[in-house]
Length: 158
Image (tube, rainbow, N blue to C red; front, side, top):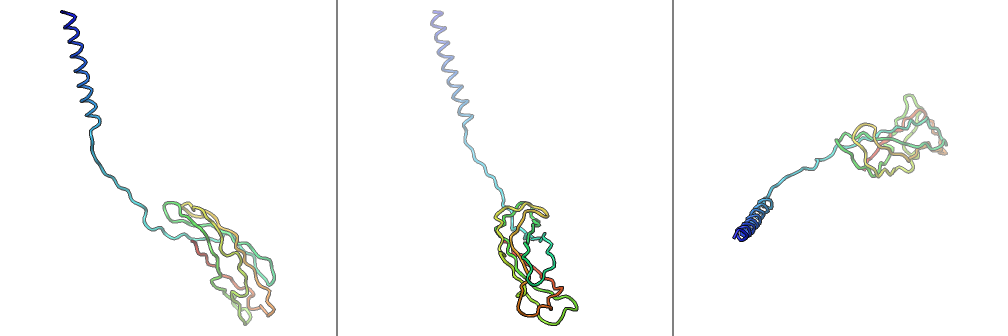
């Protein structure tokens, strides 16, 4: 009979072990729910293009000079820039310059759309653009009115 009691004890122990294991699995696989949220940054501030090339004084018929620069990105993270487009915003005649007209038609701005296609890191003087050129045209007419003039460039960032 001791074998029978021992066998019953083993069977009862096995059943009890399976019952406890089932309860433990049920506990660890219990369901539930939850929620969370995040937010995207708001609108970014505009970048500023800085011309880093110092152009030498131009004269009629001189060679084209390459324009280069970098950016100030006031945002907390990088901003993507596709292109920078240069334009002649105005020409300021020098004080005491001879009479006559000096304007954007006295200059040639070539390859004005400069491809960047890069992220510009947050901070001052980051990234780069280059490729546009500017030169003084050699017109058939008198261009003395442009002596000492300043060509003002503008940059559009896209």
